[in-house]
Length: 150
Image (cartoon, rainbow, N blue to C red; front, side, top):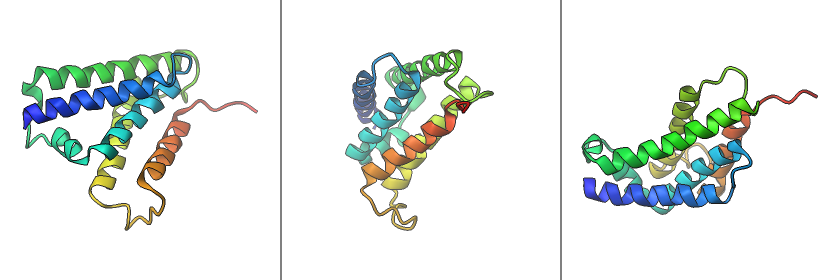
């Protein structure tokens, strides 16, 4: 199963990279959103692989150099984007890099997990999953942005 997870992680990394390429380097907040959107796109297209890759009881995640390295590569991209956004005044004041990395990961994972586990129905999510997930991601991204003086 770890080998399956390694293949799934490569596809996840490809999905995130493809989405990042659509944003360019101009806006680090757009880059963060792209990482989340790439992850959600991948989860929607690969729900079984999502379950394999996220279950530490099915795979030896930390025993796989490939899984650890690819996960760390995404984390480092997020760290760079968040640091850039903070330096440019694009983040809400007081947001710490590691806290935002963790919160972003938890949010995206939770949204994908809710869909995969069939929770959308009882929460009355009536629009297509991709639309609902994208809208939730937009709200999350909006919540981390700097407040603009009016």
